[in-house]
Image (tube, rainbow, N blue to C red; front, top):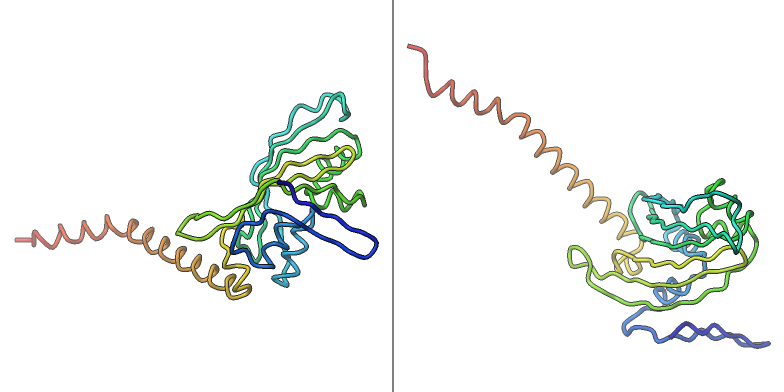
Amino acid sequence: MAVIDSFKANATSVEFSWPPDLTGLERIMLSAQGDLQRLLSAFFARTINIKPIYAHTSPRTQPASPEDPITQRREVHLLCDGKTVCVATSFVTITSPLCERLFLDEKFAVGQTFRKMQTPPQFALLDCGIKMGENEKRTLWRRYTLSTEGFECDITEVFPDRDMFVLGDQWLVQELDSAQETDAGRAKSDMLLLLLPLILFSSSSNAFPPP
């Protein structure tokens, strides 16, 4: 069931078969219509940056058009203070030269492309759910589409830890401390590997004292 976002002269309703146990904040994030980055920035009160992971674009032999669309498969990570708060994979279809220029040449991200065009996209939430991720963390995901004339996106997003929507700043600090501890542990292991030959050589030398 796709989300039903309806309104009348003095009423608005958003209806969907939501998974059980979702919080109100999670339903708001899952209903974001191309402005997730802005909502996350408001929630954390921090800048949300986009880190491109990959982008595979079809050949650009002529300007994009409905007869000759340009497509792209891409993955980006949304980062807050260097921590990943969302992983988004998308299949984008471009059928206008304006969208081609904004998205491929000027490198606007998906949400920023819609904002730059000053055209609210048509939004359809296709599915969403909860699953266990790495380290037994509860992840939240959704699949949805955004479209306007000349620009269509089929997007799957994964929020790596539902606790972020409960703990907020505390979650960011915990994740940062955990990453620093991991980096310190790796540095210590690397140092031991570098020193191991010297330790072994010293031990072997002491085992055979000079006559």
